[in-house]
Amino acid sequence: MPVKNRFAELLPEITEWRHDLHQNPEILFETHRTAQIVADKLKAFGCDEIATGLGRTGVVGVIKGKSTASGKVIGLRADMDALPIHETTGVDYASKIPGAMHACGHDGHTAMLLGAAKYLAETRNFDGTVVVIFQPAEEGGAGGKEMCDDGMMDRFGIQEVYGMHNWPGIPTGQFAIRPGGFFASTDQFEITVRGQGGHAAQPDKGVDPIVTTSAVISALQSIASRNVDPVEQVVVSVCSIESSSKAYNVIPNSVTLRGTIRSMSKETRALAETRLKAIATATCEAFGAKAEIRWIDGYPTMVNSEAQTEFAAEVATEVAGACDHAGIFMGGEDFAYMLEERPGAYILVGNGPSSSLHAADYNFNDEAIPAGCSWWAGLAERRMPAA
Ligand SMILES: [Zn+2]
Ligand SMILES: [Zn+2]
Image 1 (cartoon, rainbow, N blue to C red):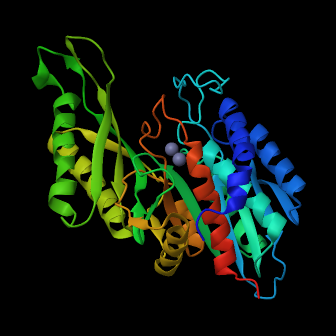
Image 2 (image 1 turned 120 degrees about the vertical axis):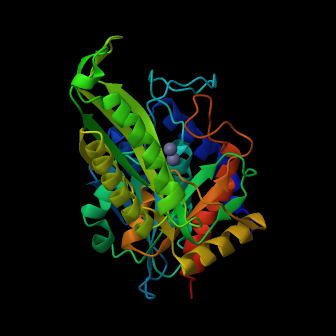
């Protein structure tokens, strides 16, 4: 089963959909137009059921096979949202919305899953049910979590769930995957160091939150170097320092730090949180200051299930002739929530030598469409073979 011929035929049409989505990017949960287009197309394809409004602006389509006697139900998920970036690609179908663009290729993801839905609704060459899932707000809004919280998995009886992301640097239409931890947890922290401000020439009269903060930042580096097992992955990054004074001759009352912690396991994630709180609290105390800590839970680690990863790689190998072993990525992915609810797997499809994701000159590579669509269709036909 190399690339399915039907997708070579459908390529111009799917590309047209993609370019239309690209011209009309929508951010986070504001994917109203995109969701409407998705729902309209699923209806035109003859899906058996279409549900809108899951996770606010998410859309679900149900496609039954020639038979459903197997009782199997698999979910195939794409994301629909764009990013608050001003596009500089210069393509003739560039974003019409200033300050918004599809810089992560979710336009391509939506178009590919629509293409697969069209094919699957046409052929229905499987014994079971396919549930196509189109989610909003992957880029930091946890739209996937909201769809799960709305009861999507139980409502549609989804037993396994699969996801795909285009990946710059992987040859176009080739695939890569790994079992286990794949994308990182993405928690955020804010630490306000409260001291006692005053005249810069009289530091002895107060408690300097600047000097305290510098000690806190240095000490936080020991989470990665001294607390977490060296063979585990963790990133602790302080990304912003904000003083309550901008003056040259005033010791401020307080300093606020903001940053992120990334990890690949529940244990490391919990350890990093405990250590961050302990280090910030005790270091501030040692300097006579006080730490106020706000911990903001981000996406959990995205963990691919063993059996489904093996199966996803088999289908990818049939499509592309091979499937590479992917490395760990310390970025986040909210498909993690769906993988917490059901076994499944997330795969990367090559976008060729393009600019990196989230760059203003990035563009999804339409030449990856036949491979991506074939993988989606192959998952359904192979996981639930027709009698
Ligand atoms: Zn992204
Ligand atoms: Zn993305």
